[in-house]
Length: 289
Image 1 (cartoon, rainbow, N blue to C red):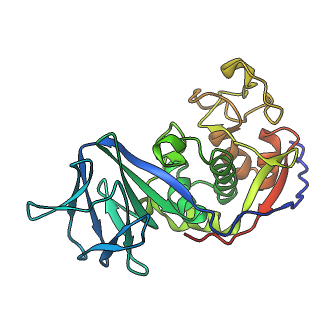
Image 2 (cartoon, helix red, strand yellow; image 1 turned 60 degrees about the horizontal axis):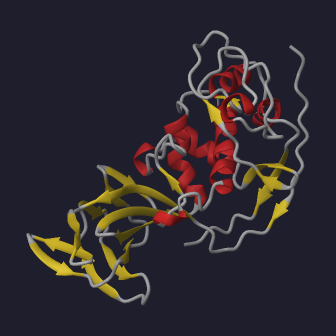
């Protein structure tokens, strides 16, 4: 099979150093539990005032309470007096919720007397929890790298998608599956690190690089599913005819990417095949909270 020729064009995009991504973990909840590996501070997001210090390896219950947020310790309520607080772990600490560990900080918000839990963290750390959740960590490294670039592009292009709830993306298939630090694997961490800051662009804009599990031999034009043509999407052979169709069929086939990687194609060649007339951009890596 003839090699696909890829041209790597690095475009430098200026992103504010404060850029981070906010991931919705829970919403419309009356309460939930949070813990920390090394202790943490509960901070009023607006004033920066420390409201409470929680101990390591203990779970604390947060509840919608009297129009604000209540912290319950041994059954005793503490009114935190705020509708939006930050839970910040000590240096190199991890936070726990949903029986999983997470990097970054948590934001707890009371909206209409229901709680929302948000994980706020640098996008490169977010991707460490996305790539192994979206693609098997044992697959070819070039396929994992293609997945990392596609996932990074999707995340940045969709930043603010759920702004009315106080976050950018959900941690489910509605956006991208994100399993936090618990899901991290050495192979997928390497794929994220090796592609740090690289994104897909069309007409000098970062694209939402849609992907799916398998197409059964041929990907779809976006208009076949969403009644809208996207210029960076076109129907192409998906190299996954041995796999049953699974997903919307738009953009990169993950099984196809892995099959191409097994044939010796690198991540850039794989992505150039599945997306139309794209370039590769590089965003600045200063990701801070």
